[in-house]
Length: 114
Image (tube, rainbow, N blue to C red; front, side):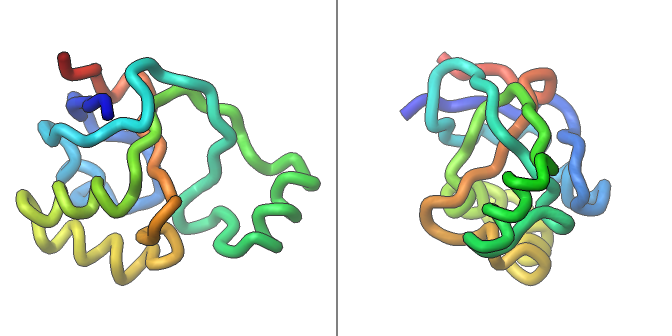
């Protein structure tokens, strides 16, 4: 699996302090190169399969370039450096902190680690 380093505060709906906690961390990435993905807000986006289908049909997703990171792996890394930020994710976005879910870090916020 590839890795990325978060180099600047990623955009998003989490509070600024929570997003700042990602900076400097090395996270496992699903791919070595950035891709284009359908994205939605972590708090305002769909939470269930039914909601995801409605979101798709209503063309509410946006296409974003970046790296996808398994959420559980990312939260484990975050837990080691900032337990409070990891707790925020578990409490405020439990729908995202599960197996087969991913976080998308925009290309401009990270760099691949060799």
